[in-house]
Image (cartoon, rainbow, N blue to C red):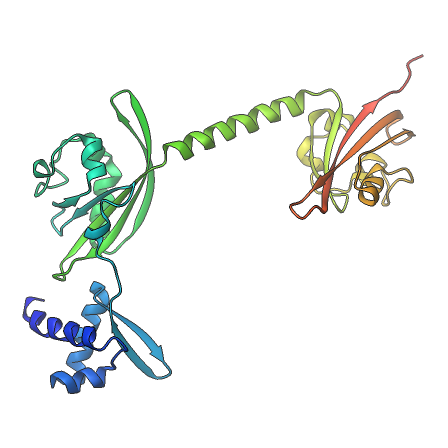
Length: 304
């Protein structure tokens, strides 16, 4: 690689002086080197990120890279960023991570990640995926990390990197995803609590789409038909409730779809032998159109 540095530097300079782009033939003429060698040098520049290529018909046109050096943005992000060389030694660490670890840059630069004692780098996947990144494999993981009395959730990405001198390395980007993970946990808990409430209600509840297909039912609804809630999913409501292949003459779902307002009906249903009170309420999509309805069914059969 080192024997090519003169040629690579020369080609980079030519491309910078010709921002409208140059073909392999143009560059070959400019530096008086055969096209095969120029093509090889351009491949190296493309891989290392120092050149870009656009195809115009059969012609390949090369341009100077418009990339922003990573070193210029390390401290302009809220993420934690680490650069490792081919021996997995620390080349650079941004200020955010130094502050998190409470160390000075000089205390970590040049050390091997395998030998570093700070616990964030002892997350097993960090070392394992750093080695894989040297072989060109990008990866992303999530892991929790305890620092003092505080628990963080981290999204850790390993990116294979080629530096300006053509040497391989690894960029590790660590994102603090604690807020997102805690929000997800709260959401899961809320869904769990909703499920418990939904299935604890004695009224029979069903959620339908706009074509009368059952999307969800609670246990009270399923118990009426001696089945499990999941057995009802995907079936037409009138098949389950009325045992027929068509809607009921007093179907509240029809009324909801025509009026876009809640509807209430009462009737005796011979299929289950009960007098029922059914209230249906519309579900609207983002465009204000009805996408389904929620049905609450009560048994109002009078006991003798």
